Length: 69
Image 1: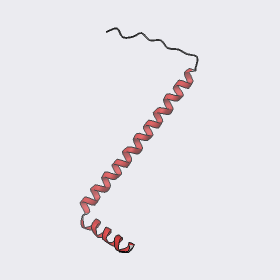
Image 2 (image 1 turned 135 degrees about the vertical axis):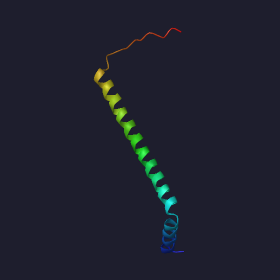
Image 3 (image 1 turned 45 degrees about the vertical axis):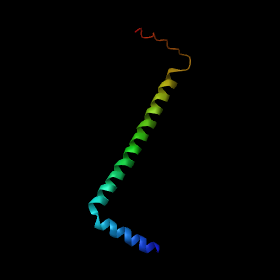
Image 4 (image 1 turned 60 degrees about the vertical axis):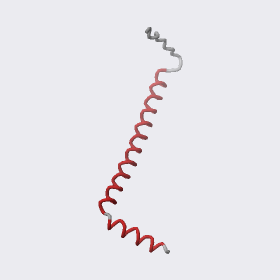
């Protein structure tokens, strides 16, 4: 089979199952969008935490008491 035949079969399949195709595309869009948002939030938090520690300086030592249970 040639590429044109594969393309024709794919288009016919998409047009005959419109709802399934639309729901599949919607799911893929939501999934990719969620991954992008989570990666962006993670990178932003990492930068924020890193800059916060850099602002404190390297000559500080915090001692906190243990929780006596």
